[in-house]
Image (cartoon, rainbow over all chains, first blue to last red; front, side, top):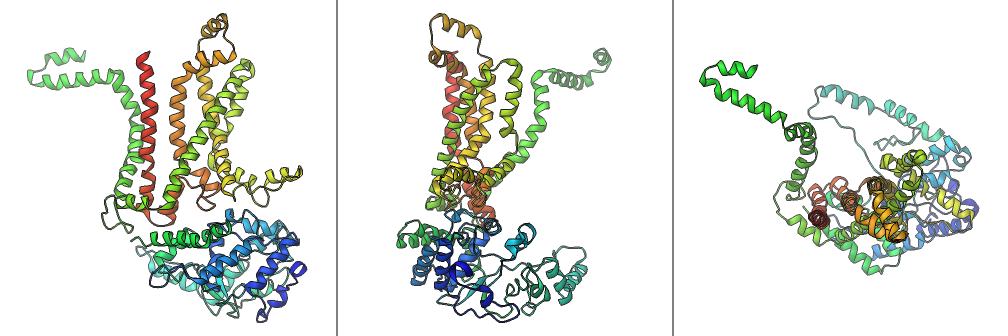
Length: 284
Length: 312
Protein backbone atom coordinates (compact mmCIF):
# COMPACT_ATOMS: atom_id res chain seq x y z
CA UNK A 1 0.00 0.00 0.00
CA UNK A 2 2.87 2.32 0.79
CA UNK A 3 4.34 1.76 -2.64
CA UNK A 4 1.19 2.07 -4.72
CA UNK A 5 -1.21 4.16 -2.62
CA UNK A 6 1.25 6.11 -0.52
CA UNK A 7 -0.48 4.92 2.63
CA UNK A 8 1.79 3.80 5.45
CA UNK A 9 -0.27 1.51 7.66
CA UNK A 10 2.69 0.98 9.97
CA UNK A 11 2.77 4.71 10.69
CA UNK A 12 -1.01 4.77 11.15
CA UNK A 13 -0.94 1.80 13.49
CA UNK A 14 2.47 1.99 15.22
CA UNK A 15 3.46 -0.89 17.46
CA UNK A 16 3.06 -0.08 21.13
CA UNK A 17 1.18 3.15 20.52
CA UNK A 18 -2.36 4.33 19.93
CA UNK A 19 -3.45 4.44 16.29
CA UNK A 20 -3.03 7.65 14.32
CA UNK A 21 -5.53 6.66 11.71
CA UNK A 22 -7.86 9.60 11.32
CA UNK A 23 -7.03 9.67 7.62
CA UNK A 24 -7.88 5.98 7.28
CA UNK A 25 -11.38 6.61 5.98
CA UNK A 26 -13.62 4.66 3.63
CA UNK A 27 -12.87 7.23 0.92
CA UNK A 28 -9.14 6.76 1.29
CA UNK A 29 -9.65 3.03 1.49
CA UNK A 30 -11.32 3.22 -1.92
CA UNK A 31 -8.47 5.31 -3.33
CA UNK A 32 -5.95 2.81 -1.98
CA UNK A 33 -7.92 -0.07 -3.51
CA UNK A 34 -7.84 1.68 -6.87
CA UNK A 35 -4.12 2.47 -6.65
CA UNK A 36 -3.21 -1.08 -5.65
CA UNK A 37 -5.41 -2.48 -8.41
CA UNK A 38 -3.59 -0.30 -10.91
CA UNK A 39 -0.30 -1.41 -9.38
CA UNK A 40 -1.17 -5.05 -10.07
CA UNK A 41 -1.67 -6.05 -6.44
CA UNK A 42 -5.45 -5.68 -5.85
CA UNK A 43 -7.08 -5.87 -2.45
CA UNK A 44 -8.38 -9.38 -1.83
CA UNK A 45 -11.76 -8.96 -0.15
CA UNK A 46 -14.15 -11.89 -0.45
CA UNK A 47 -17.79 -11.43 -1.40
CA UNK A 48 -18.82 -15.01 -0.94
CA UNK A 49 -21.10 -16.57 1.62
CA UNK A 50 -18.60 -17.67 4.24
CA UNK A 51 -17.80 -15.85 7.47
CA UNK A 52 -14.83 -13.75 6.32
CA UNK A 53 -16.89 -12.18 3.56
CA UNK A 54 -19.98 -11.76 5.72
CA UNK A 55 -18.00 -10.29 8.63
CA UNK A 56 -16.26 -7.76 6.43
CA UNK A 57 -19.37 -6.55 4.66
CA UNK A 58 -21.16 -6.37 8.02
CA UNK A 59 -18.51 -4.02 9.42
CA UNK A 60 -18.75 -1.77 6.36
CA UNK A 61 -22.55 -1.69 6.58
CA UNK A 62 -22.23 -0.50 10.17
CA UNK A 63 -19.59 2.08 9.19
CA UNK A 64 -22.25 3.58 6.90
CA UNK A 65 -25.03 3.13 9.47
CA UNK A 66 -26.75 0.80 7.03
CA UNK A 67 -29.36 -1.18 8.90
CA UNK A 68 -31.48 -3.72 7.04
CA UNK A 69 -33.63 -4.92 9.95
CA UNK A 70 -33.94 -2.82 13.09
CA UNK A 71 -33.85 -4.00 16.68
CA UNK A 72 -37.64 -4.41 16.74
CA UNK A 73 -37.52 -6.77 13.79
CA UNK A 74 -38.90 -4.35 11.20
CA UNK A 75 -37.46 -4.58 7.69
CA UNK A 76 -35.93 -1.16 7.02
CA UNK A 77 -33.63 -2.05 4.13
CA UNK A 78 -34.91 0.72 1.86
CA UNK A 79 -32.94 3.56 3.41
CA UNK A 80 -30.26 5.97 2.21
CA UNK A 81 -27.48 4.50 4.34
CA UNK A 82 -27.96 1.14 2.65
CA UNK A 83 -27.95 2.84 -0.74
CA UNK A 84 -24.74 4.61 0.23
CA UNK A 85 -22.92 1.45 1.30
CA UNK A 86 -24.03 -0.35 -1.85
CA UNK A 87 -22.59 2.49 -3.92
CA UNK A 88 -19.37 2.20 -1.91
CA UNK A 89 -19.16 -1.53 -2.51
CA UNK A 90 -19.93 -1.10 -6.19
CA UNK A 91 -16.91 1.19 -6.51
CA UNK A 92 -14.77 -1.10 -4.39
CA UNK A 93 -15.67 -4.27 -6.29
CA UNK A 94 -14.37 -2.79 -9.50
CA UNK A 95 -10.90 -3.03 -7.93
CA UNK A 96 -11.25 -6.54 -6.50
CA UNK A 97 -10.52 -9.85 -8.24
CA UNK A 98 -13.40 -10.75 -10.53
CA UNK A 99 -14.10 -14.02 -8.73
CA UNK A 100 -14.33 -12.46 -5.25
CA UNK A 101 -18.04 -13.47 -5.09
CA UNK A 102 -16.88 -17.09 -5.07
CA UNK A 103 -14.27 -16.74 -2.37
CA UNK A 104 -14.35 -18.83 0.75
CA UNK A 105 -12.50 -18.32 4.01
CA UNK A 106 -9.30 -19.73 2.55
CA UNK A 107 -9.30 -17.71 -0.65
CA UNK A 108 -8.17 -14.41 0.87
CA UNK A 109 -5.41 -16.18 2.78
CA UNK A 110 -4.13 -17.78 -0.39
CA UNK A 111 -4.43 -14.44 -2.18
CA UNK A 112 -2.14 -12.78 0.34
CA UNK A 113 0.34 -15.64 0.59
CA UNK A 114 0.58 -15.87 -3.19
CA UNK A 115 1.96 -12.32 -3.17
CA UNK A 116 -0.74 -11.11 -5.57
CA UNK A 117 -2.57 -8.84 -3.17
CA UNK A 118 -1.87 -5.76 -1.09
CA UNK A 119 -4.58 -6.20 1.56
CA UNK A 120 -7.04 -8.72 2.90
CA UNK A 121 -9.67 -8.44 5.64
CA UNK A 122 -8.78 -11.28 7.94
CA UNK A 123 -7.36 -12.17 11.34
CA UNK A 124 -3.60 -12.80 11.15
CA UNK A 125 -3.99 -16.46 10.16
CA UNK A 126 -2.87 -15.62 6.64
CA UNK A 127 0.19 -13.95 8.13
CA UNK A 128 0.87 -17.08 10.22
CA UNK A 129 0.71 -19.24 7.09
CA UNK A 130 2.96 -16.80 5.24
CA UNK A 131 5.42 -16.88 8.14
CA UNK A 132 5.67 -20.62 7.64
CA UNK A 133 5.44 -20.90 3.84
CA UNK A 134 6.44 -17.51 2.42
CA UNK A 135 8.51 -15.58 4.99
CA UNK A 136 9.24 -12.80 2.52
CA UNK A 137 5.49 -12.08 2.38
CA UNK A 138 5.08 -12.30 6.16
CA UNK A 139 7.80 -9.70 6.63
CA UNK A 140 5.66 -7.21 4.74
CA UNK A 141 2.43 -7.87 6.66
CA UNK A 142 0.97 -5.50 9.22
CA UNK A 143 -2.33 -6.10 11.02
CA UNK A 144 -4.34 -2.91 11.30
CA UNK A 145 -7.86 -1.59 11.84
CA UNK A 146 -10.82 -0.93 9.57
CA UNK A 147 -11.33 2.43 7.86
CA UNK A 148 -13.76 4.85 9.48
CA UNK A 149 -17.05 5.46 7.69
CA UNK A 150 -19.69 8.18 8.01
CA UNK A 151 -21.13 6.46 11.10
CA UNK A 152 -17.98 5.23 12.78
CA UNK A 153 -15.24 2.64 12.73
CA UNK A 154 -16.32 -0.97 13.13
CA UNK A 155 -14.50 -4.28 12.97
CA UNK A 156 -15.90 -7.81 12.84
CA UNK A 157 -16.01 -9.94 15.91
CA UNK A 158 -17.11 -13.53 16.33
CA UNK A 159 -17.22 -14.64 19.96
CA UNK A 160 -17.15 -18.30 20.92
CA UNK A 161 -17.91 -19.73 24.32
CA UNK A 162 -16.82 -22.60 26.49
CA UNK A 163 -19.66 -24.43 28.12
CA UNK A 164 -20.24 -27.54 30.18
CA UNK A 165 -23.10 -29.95 29.50
CA UNK A 166 -25.98 -29.69 31.92
CA UNK A 167 -26.06 -33.49 32.13
CA UNK A 168 -22.30 -33.80 32.73
CA UNK A 169 -21.30 -36.18 35.48
CA UNK A 170 -18.63 -33.98 36.98
CA UNK A 171 -19.81 -30.42 36.58
CA UNK A 172 -17.69 -29.01 39.43
CA UNK A 173 -14.55 -30.29 37.68
CA UNK A 174 -15.68 -28.74 34.38
CA UNK A 175 -16.38 -25.42 36.07
CA UNK A 176 -13.04 -25.56 37.82
CA UNK A 177 -11.27 -26.16 34.50
CA UNK A 178 -13.10 -23.27 32.84
CA UNK A 179 -12.28 -20.99 35.77
CA UNK A 180 -8.64 -21.99 35.53
CA UNK A 181 -8.54 -21.42 31.78
CA UNK A 182 -10.05 -17.98 32.29
CA UNK A 183 -7.29 -16.77 34.62
CA UNK A 184 -4.96 -14.16 33.08
CA UNK A 185 -1.93 -16.45 33.30
CA UNK A 186 -3.75 -19.27 31.49
CA UNK A 187 -5.15 -16.85 28.92
CA UNK A 188 -1.66 -15.57 28.22
CA UNK A 189 -0.43 -19.11 27.61
CA UNK A 190 -3.36 -19.87 25.29
CA UNK A 191 -2.75 -16.69 23.30
CA UNK A 192 0.95 -17.55 23.04
CA UNK A 193 0.10 -21.10 21.93
CA UNK A 194 -2.10 -19.78 19.12
CA UNK A 195 0.65 -17.40 17.99
CA UNK A 196 -1.58 -14.46 18.89
CA UNK A 197 -4.50 -15.59 16.72
CA UNK A 198 -7.01 -16.36 19.49
CA UNK A 199 -8.50 -13.32 21.16
CA UNK A 200 -9.63 -13.73 24.76
CA UNK A 201 -13.13 -12.62 25.62
CA UNK A 202 -11.86 -10.16 28.22
CA UNK A 203 -11.78 -6.47 27.51
CA UNK A 204 -8.67 -5.83 29.58
CA UNK A 205 -6.53 -8.66 28.23
CA UNK A 206 -5.60 -6.98 24.98
CA UNK A 207 -2.01 -6.01 25.67
CA UNK A 208 -0.34 -9.35 26.21
CA UNK A 209 3.29 -9.60 25.21
CA UNK A 210 2.59 -12.13 22.44
CA UNK A 211 0.92 -9.45 20.34
CA UNK A 212 3.67 -6.95 21.11
CA UNK A 213 6.50 -9.29 20.31
CA UNK A 214 5.33 -11.55 17.50
CA UNK A 215 7.33 -11.08 14.34
CA UNK A 216 8.27 -10.65 11.54
CA UNK A 217 8.05 -7.68 11.50
CA UNK A 218 8.08 -7.09 15.23
CA UNK A 219 4.80 -5.61 16.46
CA UNK A 220 2.87 -6.76 13.42
CA UNK A 221 0.07 -8.09 15.65
CA UNK A 222 0.04 -5.27 18.19
CA UNK A 223 -3.23 -3.72 17.00
CA UNK A 224 -4.99 -7.02 16.27
CA UNK A 225 -6.74 -7.26 19.70
CA UNK A 226 -7.88 -3.63 19.43
CA UNK A 227 -5.86 -2.55 22.52
CA UNK A 228 -6.86 1.11 22.30
CA UNK A 229 -10.56 0.48 21.59
CA UNK A 230 -9.93 2.23 18.33
CA UNK A 231 -12.83 0.49 16.61
CA UNK A 232 -16.14 -0.96 17.77
CA UNK A 233 -16.24 -4.71 17.56
CA UNK A 234 -19.44 -5.98 16.01
CA UNK A 235 -21.07 -9.10 14.63
CA UNK A 236 -22.45 -8.80 11.13
CA UNK A 237 -26.19 -7.95 11.16
CA UNK A 238 -26.27 -8.16 14.96
CA UNK A 239 -28.53 -5.10 15.15
CA UNK A 240 -31.47 -7.29 14.11
CA UNK A 241 -33.17 -9.67 16.56
CA UNK A 242 -31.00 -12.81 16.92
CA UNK A 243 -33.19 -15.21 14.91
CA UNK A 244 -33.31 -12.81 11.95
CA UNK A 245 -29.66 -11.78 12.29
CA UNK A 246 -28.66 -15.43 12.19
CA UNK A 247 -30.51 -15.87 8.89
CA UNK A 248 -28.96 -12.72 7.42
CA UNK A 249 -25.53 -14.03 8.41
CA UNK A 250 -26.05 -17.60 7.20
CA UNK A 251 -27.67 -16.61 3.91
CA UNK A 252 -25.02 -13.90 3.36
CA UNK A 253 -27.76 -11.46 2.44
CA UNK A 254 -25.51 -8.39 2.71
CA UNK A 255 -22.80 -9.69 0.38
CA UNK A 256 -25.44 -10.86 -2.06
CA UNK A 257 -26.93 -7.36 -2.11
CA UNK A 258 -23.51 -5.89 -2.93
CA UNK A 259 -22.83 -8.41 -5.69
CA UNK A 260 -26.28 -8.03 -7.24
CA UNK A 261 -25.96 -4.27 -7.36
CA UNK A 262 -22.41 -4.40 -8.65
CA UNK A 263 -23.44 -6.76 -11.46
CA UNK A 264 -25.85 -4.25 -12.89
CA UNK A 265 -29.10 -4.78 -11.04
CA UNK A 266 -30.95 -1.51 -10.37
CA UNK A 267 -30.61 -0.20 -6.83
CA UNK A 268 -34.34 -0.42 -6.12
CA UNK A 269 -34.50 -3.94 -7.56
CA UNK A 270 -31.69 -5.03 -5.22
CA UNK A 271 -33.44 -3.44 -2.26
CA UNK A 272 -36.74 -5.06 -3.24
CA UNK A 273 -35.03 -8.44 -3.50
CA UNK A 274 -33.44 -7.92 -0.10
CA UNK A 275 -36.77 -6.89 1.39
CA UNK A 276 -38.36 -10.11 0.11
CA UNK A 277 -35.53 -12.19 1.56
CA UNK A 278 -35.64 -10.42 4.91
CA UNK A 279 -39.40 -10.80 5.17
CA UNK A 280 -38.89 -14.49 4.56
CA UNK A 281 -36.54 -14.62 7.56
CA UNK A 282 -39.40 -13.53 9.85
CA UNK A 283 -40.82 -17.06 9.86
CA UNK A 284 -41.41 -18.37 13.33
CA UNK B 1 -36.40 -89.95 9.02
CA UNK B 2 -37.87 -87.13 10.97
CA UNK B 3 -41.05 -87.44 9.00
CA UNK B 4 -41.32 -91.07 9.97
CA UNK B 5 -40.77 -90.20 13.63
CA UNK B 6 -43.49 -87.61 13.42
CA UNK B 7 -45.86 -90.16 11.95
CA UNK B 8 -45.59 -92.17 15.14
CA UNK B 9 -46.51 -89.25 17.42
CA UNK B 10 -50.03 -88.55 18.56
CA UNK B 11 -52.58 -86.78 16.41
CA UNK B 12 -52.37 -83.64 18.59
CA UNK B 13 -48.83 -82.92 17.39
CA UNK B 14 -49.80 -83.13 13.73
CA UNK B 15 -50.35 -79.38 13.17
CA UNK B 16 -46.92 -78.61 14.69
CA UNK B 17 -45.33 -81.13 12.40
CA UNK B 18 -47.09 -79.70 9.40
CA UNK B 19 -45.93 -76.31 10.45
CA UNK B 20 -42.30 -77.45 10.71
CA UNK B 21 -42.50 -79.20 7.35
CA UNK B 22 -44.07 -76.08 5.88
CA UNK B 23 -41.23 -73.98 7.22
CA UNK B 24 -38.70 -76.32 5.68
CA UNK B 25 -40.50 -76.18 2.36
CA UNK B 26 -40.63 -72.42 2.56
CA UNK B 27 -36.92 -72.25 3.28
CA UNK B 28 -36.26 -74.47 0.30
CA UNK B 29 -38.16 -72.09 -1.93
CA UNK B 30 -35.88 -69.84 -3.95
CA UNK B 31 -37.97 -66.77 -3.24
CA UNK B 32 -37.70 -67.29 0.52
CA UNK B 33 -33.97 -67.77 0.35
CA UNK B 34 -33.68 -64.66 -1.78
CA UNK B 35 -35.78 -62.72 0.69
CA UNK B 36 -33.64 -63.84 3.62
CA UNK B 37 -30.47 -62.94 1.78
CA UNK B 38 -31.74 -59.47 1.01
CA UNK B 39 -33.17 -59.00 4.50
CA UNK B 40 -30.05 -57.23 5.87
CA UNK B 41 -30.24 -54.79 2.98
CA UNK B 42 -33.98 -54.32 3.44
CA UNK B 43 -33.40 -53.57 7.12
CA UNK B 44 -30.66 -51.10 6.24
CA UNK B 45 -32.91 -49.38 3.73
CA UNK B 46 -35.74 -49.26 6.26
CA UNK B 47 -33.43 -47.72 8.83
CA UNK B 48 -31.48 -45.33 6.63
CA UNK B 49 -33.96 -44.46 3.89
CA UNK B 50 -37.60 -45.23 4.73
CA UNK B 51 -37.52 -44.02 8.33
CA UNK B 52 -35.70 -40.73 7.51
CA UNK B 53 -38.03 -40.21 4.55
CA UNK B 54 -41.14 -40.49 6.71
CA UNK B 55 -39.49 -38.47 9.46
CA UNK B 56 -38.70 -35.69 6.99
CA UNK B 57 -42.35 -35.81 5.86
CA UNK B 58 -43.30 -35.24 9.48
CA UNK B 59 -40.71 -32.46 9.86
CA UNK B 60 -41.98 -30.72 6.74
CA UNK B 61 -45.35 -30.23 8.41
CA UNK B 62 -43.96 -28.36 11.41
CA UNK B 63 -43.27 -24.68 11.95
CA UNK B 64 -39.72 -23.29 12.14
CA UNK B 65 -39.38 -23.90 15.87
CA UNK B 66 -40.80 -27.41 15.34
CA UNK B 67 -43.48 -26.94 17.96
CA UNK B 68 -46.58 -26.50 15.86
CA UNK B 69 -48.25 -28.43 13.02
CA UNK B 70 -48.59 -26.22 9.96
CA UNK B 71 -49.73 -28.76 7.37
CA UNK B 72 -48.58 -27.68 3.92
CA UNK B 73 -47.63 -24.22 5.17
CA UNK B 74 -43.93 -24.73 4.48
CA UNK B 75 -44.61 -25.66 0.88
CA UNK B 76 -46.90 -22.66 0.47
CA UNK B 77 -44.13 -20.46 1.86
CA UNK B 78 -41.56 -21.99 -0.50
CA UNK B 79 -43.75 -21.28 -3.51
CA UNK B 80 -43.56 -17.57 -2.69
CA UNK B 81 -39.74 -17.55 -2.57
CA UNK B 82 -37.80 -16.37 -5.60
CA UNK B 83 -34.78 -18.46 -4.63
CA UNK B 84 -36.86 -21.64 -4.49
CA UNK B 85 -37.92 -21.33 -8.12
CA UNK B 86 -34.31 -20.51 -9.01
CA UNK B 87 -33.26 -23.76 -7.33
CA UNK B 88 -35.95 -25.75 -9.17
CA UNK B 89 -34.77 -24.31 -12.47
CA UNK B 90 -31.10 -24.89 -11.67
CA UNK B 91 -31.65 -28.44 -10.48
CA UNK B 92 -33.33 -29.25 -13.79
CA UNK B 93 -30.59 -27.54 -15.84
CA UNK B 94 -27.89 -29.26 -13.78
CA UNK B 95 -29.38 -32.75 -13.88
CA UNK B 96 -30.61 -32.79 -17.48
CA UNK B 97 -27.47 -31.24 -18.99
CA UNK B 98 -25.16 -33.45 -16.95
CA UNK B 99 -27.08 -36.64 -17.74
CA UNK B 100 -27.24 -35.88 -21.48
CA UNK B 101 -23.49 -35.31 -21.67
CA UNK B 102 -22.69 -38.26 -19.44
CA UNK B 103 -24.79 -40.48 -21.69
CA UNK B 104 -23.23 -39.13 -24.89
CA UNK B 105 -19.67 -39.38 -23.62
CA UNK B 106 -20.36 -42.79 -22.08
CA UNK B 107 -21.81 -44.03 -25.39
CA UNK B 108 -18.87 -42.81 -27.46
CA UNK B 109 -16.21 -44.04 -25.04
CA UNK B 110 -17.96 -47.40 -24.66
CA UNK B 111 -17.67 -47.86 -28.43
CA UNK B 112 -14.00 -46.95 -28.38
CA UNK B 113 -13.30 -49.39 -25.56
CA UNK B 114 -15.42 -52.08 -27.23
CA UNK B 115 -13.26 -51.80 -30.33
CA UNK B 116 -9.98 -52.14 -28.43
CA UNK B 117 -8.56 -55.66 -28.74
CA UNK B 118 -9.52 -57.84 -25.75
CA UNK B 119 -5.93 -58.04 -24.54
CA UNK B 120 -5.54 -54.36 -23.69
CA UNK B 121 -9.18 -53.64 -22.95
CA UNK B 122 -9.09 -54.42 -19.25
CA UNK B 123 -6.40 -51.75 -18.66
CA UNK B 124 -8.47 -49.10 -20.42
CA UNK B 125 -11.64 -50.10 -18.61
CA UNK B 126 -9.83 -49.79 -15.29
CA UNK B 127 -8.32 -46.42 -16.09
CA UNK B 128 -11.56 -44.99 -17.42
CA UNK B 129 -13.40 -46.01 -14.28
CA UNK B 130 -11.05 -44.07 -12.01
CA UNK B 131 -13.13 -40.83 -11.88
CA UNK B 132 -16.17 -42.85 -10.87
CA UNK B 133 -14.33 -44.88 -8.26
CA UNK B 134 -12.69 -41.97 -6.41
CA UNK B 135 -15.05 -40.54 -3.76
CA UNK B 136 -16.49 -37.38 -5.36
CA UNK B 137 -15.73 -35.31 -2.26
CA UNK B 138 -12.03 -36.02 -2.79
CA UNK B 139 -11.89 -35.55 -6.52
CA UNK B 140 -13.96 -32.37 -6.30
CA UNK B 141 -11.39 -30.93 -3.92
CA UNK B 142 -8.79 -31.47 -6.62
CA UNK B 143 -11.09 -29.70 -9.09
CA UNK B 144 -11.56 -26.88 -6.60
CA UNK B 145 -7.81 -26.34 -6.59
CA UNK B 146 -7.77 -26.42 -10.37
CA UNK B 147 -10.38 -23.65 -10.32
CA UNK B 148 -8.79 -21.74 -7.42
CA UNK B 149 -8.76 -17.93 -7.86
CA UNK B 150 -5.08 -17.57 -6.93
CA UNK B 151 -3.53 -20.84 -8.01
CA UNK B 152 -5.80 -22.15 -10.76
CA UNK B 153 -3.84 -24.52 -12.97
CA UNK B 154 -6.29 -23.91 -15.80
CA UNK B 155 -5.78 -20.17 -15.62
CA UNK B 156 -2.03 -20.71 -15.51
CA UNK B 157 -2.24 -22.68 -18.75
CA UNK B 158 -4.56 -20.12 -20.31
CA UNK B 159 -2.17 -17.33 -19.33
CA UNK B 160 0.54 -19.26 -21.15
CA UNK B 161 -1.37 -18.83 -24.42
CA UNK B 162 -2.31 -15.24 -23.65
CA UNK B 163 -5.91 -15.84 -22.57
CA UNK B 164 -7.33 -13.85 -19.63
CA UNK B 165 -7.94 -15.68 -16.38
CA UNK B 166 -11.43 -17.14 -16.12
CA UNK B 167 -13.45 -16.71 -12.91
CA UNK B 168 -14.37 -20.40 -12.90
CA UNK B 169 -16.53 -20.29 -9.82
CA UNK B 170 -17.07 -16.54 -9.61
CA UNK B 171 -19.39 -15.86 -12.56
CA UNK B 172 -22.80 -17.49 -12.84
CA UNK B 173 -22.23 -19.04 -16.26
CA UNK B 174 -18.75 -20.34 -15.52
CA UNK B 175 -19.78 -21.60 -12.09
CA UNK B 176 -22.66 -23.59 -13.59
CA UNK B 177 -20.35 -24.88 -16.29
CA UNK B 178 -17.80 -25.93 -13.66
CA UNK B 179 -20.19 -27.91 -11.47
CA UNK B 180 -21.74 -29.62 -14.48
CA UNK B 181 -18.30 -30.40 -15.91
CA UNK B 182 -17.17 -32.06 -12.69
CA UNK B 183 -20.42 -34.01 -12.45
CA UNK B 184 -19.96 -35.26 -16.02
CA UNK B 185 -16.35 -36.18 -15.27
CA UNK B 186 -17.41 -38.21 -12.24
CA UNK B 187 -20.49 -39.82 -13.78
CA UNK B 188 -19.57 -40.57 -17.41
CA UNK B 189 -17.59 -43.74 -16.55
CA UNK B 190 -20.75 -45.26 -15.06
CA UNK B 191 -22.54 -44.83 -18.38
CA UNK B 192 -19.47 -46.11 -20.18
CA UNK B 193 -19.35 -49.35 -18.23
CA UNK B 194 -23.10 -49.97 -18.48
CA UNK B 195 -23.11 -49.30 -22.21
CA UNK B 196 -20.03 -51.43 -22.68
CA UNK B 197 -21.74 -54.37 -20.96
CA UNK B 198 -24.77 -53.78 -23.14
CA UNK B 199 -22.67 -53.57 -26.32
CA UNK B 200 -21.01 -56.87 -25.51
CA UNK B 201 -24.39 -58.55 -25.30
CA UNK B 202 -25.44 -57.50 -28.80
CA UNK B 203 -25.15 -60.67 -30.97
CA UNK B 204 -22.52 -60.37 -33.72
CA UNK B 205 -24.93 -62.07 -36.14
CA UNK B 206 -27.08 -58.94 -36.16
CA UNK B 207 -24.14 -56.84 -37.35
CA UNK B 208 -23.21 -59.51 -39.88
CA UNK B 209 -26.77 -59.55 -41.22
CA UNK B 210 -26.79 -55.76 -41.35
CA UNK B 211 -23.47 -55.78 -43.22
CA UNK B 212 -24.82 -58.28 -45.73
CA UNK B 213 -27.81 -56.00 -46.24
CA UNK B 214 -25.37 -53.18 -47.01
CA UNK B 215 -25.93 -51.13 -43.83
CA UNK B 216 -23.39 -48.39 -43.26
CA UNK B 217 -21.84 -47.45 -39.90
CA UNK B 218 -24.61 -45.05 -38.97
CA UNK B 219 -27.36 -47.52 -39.95
CA UNK B 220 -25.76 -50.23 -37.86
CA UNK B 221 -25.80 -47.88 -34.86
CA UNK B 222 -29.34 -46.67 -35.48
CA UNK B 223 -31.03 -49.94 -36.43
CA UNK B 224 -29.02 -52.50 -34.44
CA UNK B 225 -27.01 -51.03 -31.56
CA UNK B 226 -29.47 -48.47 -30.25
CA UNK B 227 -32.57 -50.71 -30.31
CA UNK B 228 -30.61 -53.43 -28.53
CA UNK B 229 -29.41 -50.95 -25.91
CA UNK B 230 -32.69 -49.10 -25.42
CA UNK B 231 -33.62 -50.63 -22.09
CA UNK B 232 -30.18 -50.22 -20.58
CA UNK B 233 -30.04 -46.63 -21.83
CA UNK B 234 -33.43 -45.92 -20.23
CA UNK B 235 -32.57 -47.51 -16.89
CA UNK B 236 -29.12 -45.92 -16.74
CA UNK B 237 -30.59 -42.53 -17.58
CA UNK B 238 -33.23 -42.83 -14.88
CA UNK B 239 -30.73 -43.97 -12.29
CA UNK B 240 -28.31 -41.20 -13.18
CA UNK B 241 -31.08 -38.60 -13.26
CA UNK B 242 -32.05 -39.52 -9.71
CA UNK B 243 -28.47 -39.47 -8.44
CA UNK B 244 -27.60 -36.24 -10.26
CA UNK B 245 -30.76 -34.51 -9.13
CA UNK B 246 -29.97 -35.40 -5.55
CA UNK B 247 -26.29 -34.46 -5.87
CA UNK B 248 -24.77 -32.67 -2.93
CA UNK B 249 -21.02 -33.11 -2.59
CA UNK B 250 -19.85 -31.68 -5.91
CA UNK B 251 -21.82 -28.45 -5.68
CA UNK B 252 -21.23 -28.07 -1.97
CA UNK B 253 -17.45 -28.35 -2.30
CA UNK B 254 -17.02 -26.49 -5.54
CA UNK B 255 -19.29 -23.47 -5.14
CA UNK B 256 -21.41 -24.02 -2.01
CA UNK B 257 -24.31 -22.81 -4.15
CA UNK B 258 -22.76 -19.47 -5.05
CA UNK B 259 -22.30 -17.01 -6.54
CA UNK B 260 -25.66 -15.45 -5.64
CA UNK B 261 -27.28 -18.88 -5.16
CA UNK B 262 -26.86 -19.48 -8.90
CA UNK B 263 -25.53 -23.04 -8.53
CA UNK B 264 -27.70 -24.21 -5.67
CA UNK B 265 -29.60 -27.41 -6.31
CA UNK B 266 -32.17 -29.03 -4.04
CA UNK B 267 -29.80 -30.85 -1.72
CA UNK B 268 -27.36 -27.97 -1.23
CA UNK B 269 -30.12 -25.42 -0.68
CA UNK B 270 -31.93 -27.75 1.70
CA UNK B 271 -28.67 -28.07 3.66
CA UNK B 272 -28.13 -24.31 3.66
CA UNK B 273 -31.64 -23.63 4.93
CA UNK B 274 -32.15 -26.62 7.17
CA UNK B 275 -28.79 -27.30 8.77
CA UNK B 276 -26.81 -24.06 8.43
CA UNK B 277 -29.83 -21.77 8.70
CA UNK B 278 -31.47 -23.73 11.51
CA UNK B 279 -34.84 -24.02 9.73
CA UNK B 280 -35.08 -27.80 9.60
CA UNK B 281 -38.77 -28.02 8.57
CA UNK B 282 -38.19 -25.74 5.57
CA UNK B 283 -35.03 -27.67 4.65
CA UNK B 284 -37.00 -30.92 4.81
CA UNK B 285 -39.69 -29.40 2.58
CA UNK B 286 -37.09 -28.40 -0.01
CA UNK B 287 -35.57 -31.86 -0.10
CA UNK B 288 -38.99 -33.52 -0.37
CA UNK B 289 -39.77 -31.44 -3.40
CA UNK B 290 -37.41 -33.65 -5.40
CA UNK B 291 -39.75 -36.63 -5.03
CA UNK B 292 -42.63 -35.55 -7.33
CA UNK B 293 -40.20 -34.38 -10.03
CA UNK B 294 -38.26 -37.64 -9.97
CA UNK B 295 -41.46 -39.69 -9.71
CA UNK B 296 -42.77 -38.12 -12.92
CA UNK B 297 -39.46 -38.83 -14.68
CA UNK B 298 -39.48 -42.41 -13.39
CA UNK B 299 -43.04 -43.05 -14.56
CA UNK B 300 -42.24 -41.84 -18.08
CA UNK B 301 -38.99 -43.75 -18.41
CA UNK B 302 -40.19 -47.01 -16.81
CA UNK B 303 -43.49 -46.96 -18.68
CA UNK B 304 -41.50 -46.95 -21.89
CA UNK B 305 -39.53 -49.96 -20.74
CA UNK B 306 -42.71 -51.90 -19.91
CA UNK B 307 -44.11 -51.08 -23.31
CA UNK B 308 -41.06 -52.50 -25.01
CA UNK B 309 -41.17 -55.53 -22.74
CA UNK B 310 -44.74 -56.23 -23.82
CA UNK B 311 -43.84 -55.75 -27.46
CA UNK B 312 -41.13 -58.34 -27.05
